Image (cartoon, rainbow, N blue to C red; front, top):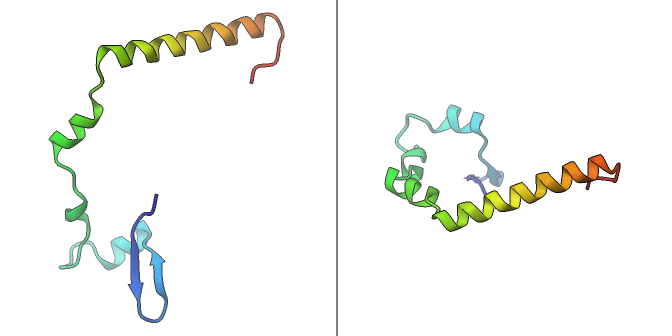
Length: 79
C-alpha cells in the first residue's frame, strides 16, 4: 500500500522497514510516527456500520455456510 520510503543521496528512494525505522528515526527530531497517528474519533468513524449493512453481511455468511455444508454432504467440490 505504498508504505514509507526514505531518500538517501547514494541509493535514491528505498523502503523504510520497521527495523530501519527503529534504528534511524524513532526518538529523534525527524521521527515520522507522530505525524501518522490517527485521532480516536476518526478510527471510530470508520468502524461504524448501520444495521442494514450488518444484516446483509450476516445473510451472506449464512448463505455461504449453508452452501458449504450442503456441498460437503453431497460430496461436491467446495470452491
